[in-house]
Image (cartoon, rainbow, N blue to C red; front, side, top):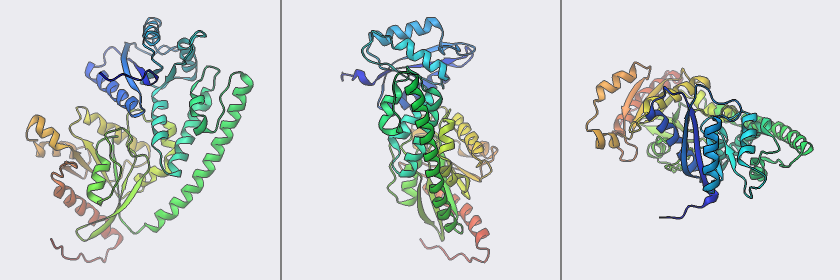
Length: 393
């Protein structure tokens, strides 16, 4: 058995109504554990408490908090991760509960938003993405500056802030963060103007955007369709920076963009900060909504993505539903009743529904044909006098 580094050990905590199904709770905690793993954190134990509403002071009840504290203390756990957002007062109280004066090492308390922001901070590669994530992180931290807040120390190099004890230090940090937020917003406005100029130069080209829940295979599909080399990993948020490639199918050229994956409870600050990146989705002529068909809760993931698209103003963009990883489904359950499934999803408003495996390249011809049909319609709107050339195999 491999020895676990205690510096990366965590417990996961969720509060849920008693009526919630056990398999749903397990799935949500599985996703939280995957997020933690993506951030380099190993899960030691999971805690579930059934409450009508989270405790206003410490999110979990007194008895459950004592149980968690005892485990954390006896197993050298250094992170406690909650599957919801904590209020500033809940965060402050929990930091105090887990960090007594006699403790040598600090226990960091994460809520879901902070964990996702940390992952984005690790993943961002371009200047635009780094600026967007830093802005979101500063907006998250601003109302949470307290004497017990230890996360600033970890983020000193990334946020441009200085953590410290005492009200004077907190007020100084608050002013510094506000000033930094102002600078970052100005930087993003400049980037947005540059991006707008780029998008105007592409105004006469059909634009297609890959969207979907995180880790469903968008980047792999991008690599197959565009013959590109986009980073594809079995980790959440492997793609943070938008990638755009030119693709030609049949006789029609178009631009294909791979964008950041969506997730349940995506932090509001992150959506706001990534506005310019999400413009690739908002201003697309067509969306390829990619789904991990092998995931047991893929219908819930479709619902999350559809809701998020509506929130960012892309709910009316025509979409092809791409049910990916059909090879895994067929290995487990046998042949898929495609006509029945296709009819069900078309009732939800998808223009077309196709089944593929981006990994094994199964049914990719069906996807290319669906893409050609939809892109050609848009292309003809841009170039009404265009005469298609005969296709050659």
